[in-house]
Length: 447
Ligand SMILES: C/C=C/C(=O)SCCNC(=O)CCNC(=O)[C@H](O)C(C)(C)COP(=O)(O)OP(=O)(O)OC[C@H]1O[C@@H](n2cnc3c(N)ncnc32)[C@H](O)[C@@H]1OP(=O)(O)O
Ligand SMILES: NC(=O)C1=CN([C@@H]2O[C@H](COP(=O)(O)OP(=O)(O)OC[C@H]3O[C@@H](n4cnc5c(N)ncnc54)[C@H](OP(=O)(O)O)[C@@H]3O)[C@@H](O)[C@H]2O)C=CC1
Image (cartoon, rainbow, N blue to C red; front, side):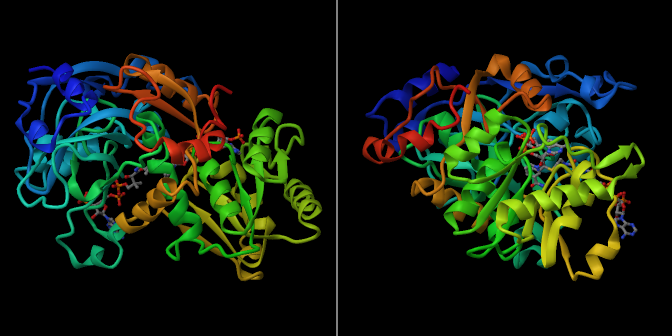
């Protein structure tokens, strides 16, 4: 039995759930990994110079044992997220520490503590097997998986599962991730695959769409409302391309920051009108490595006021971190919210706290999404209200290059990876719905 037999079953219109359940599992499968004995390979290099193509491998790995509450999924497609870039450059720390810590929790979690880390936090595919206690999903189900892994043995996580003390990001803080032909997930990561999308389109939104939903829309995040002015950094990037869509769909007014005219054009195509090209307008928020320039914050704020008819922003959708955070706090309106989920340019932020407390602003930390939030975000994709922002698709062999593109900001929107899917465009089951949205679905393609 090989993964080819699994692919044949997925591609046959006649396969039943019983057929999938009867398929023997292969002994091994191909997976994208980083290696524990290579974590020092970039020591002493600048972040920018660390090359994911050198650390990312395609290996044959054994199929992991299936535990209670878990599912093995045949992965048709996945996508590159920035967390896989972090893993591949071993920053801010090696993810093998996460696997070691998880491995200490129980006999079953020991499986994760291996000398290789199978990375990837998105997938679209087909359930192959479910473990004891799984009733909601069965072999043959077409699914996407969100990346929240929780144990939920403590009371802390039962109001909001992101608060579980054993909360982890699958494929980053756990092993057996989605950039592979087979993945191991908890069954409460599974959600229905949107019928009108191909495998690679369905795999693209998951992580960033759910994160942007919690960060911007959910009451656990900024709780955006109609008419809000929302400043969105990297508005055509992974997170930003969904934040922009949520702002537009929710009756808010996105102010999109991008770094080129081409990206500005993509934002216009999504329906945004207020756009700031940070390269063309040449903002220099830092005079040198240690000193910010409040005059540049003010110039940026004036530009926002020009675009909004004199209003300041209610919400800043933050993730660049150190480089922009001082400006983000400054330009937020009195009583407004800076909601942050990352620090791509550096995690030691500096801002002038007088502008925060005197103007009663709030900084909210946000991280991924709970199952309900991920489900709601996926539901909006399935209803055709929010669309994938897939630009380019790579093969599994080319994942290193795909991660390199994201690391060097050479990409637009989301970058997809075909795992078992032999070509793009497969897996669409609702052609009529797709036809209604096809222009929006293809908006980011091949640019
Ligand atoms: C969905 C996609 C998401 C993304 O893309 S996010 C971007 C990528 N992610 C990242 O860059 C984050 C990577 N992770 C990290 O950098 C680290 O992961 C953290 C900085 C978040 C945490 O580091 P740690 O070393 O785990 O935490 P500690 O708190 O420094 O050390 C743990 C030890 O410190 C103890 N401790 C915790 N809080 C306190 C406290 N308040 N007072 C005293 N001790 C404390 C703990 O118990 C534990 O102890 P014991 O080592 O003995 O188990
Ligand atoms: N906590 C969480 O749950 C999550 C955290 N993240 C983190 O968020 C960050 C962004 O992820 P994602 O959106 O997928 O990445 P992308 O690279 O796809 O998009 C980020 C965009 O931000 C802009 N940007 C990058 N650096 C700067 C800078 N120094 N100043 C201003 N703008 C900048 C760029 O757009 P442009 O050049 O056009 O301005 C870039 O395209 C990563 O660090 C990632 O790890 C992501 C998802 C979930």
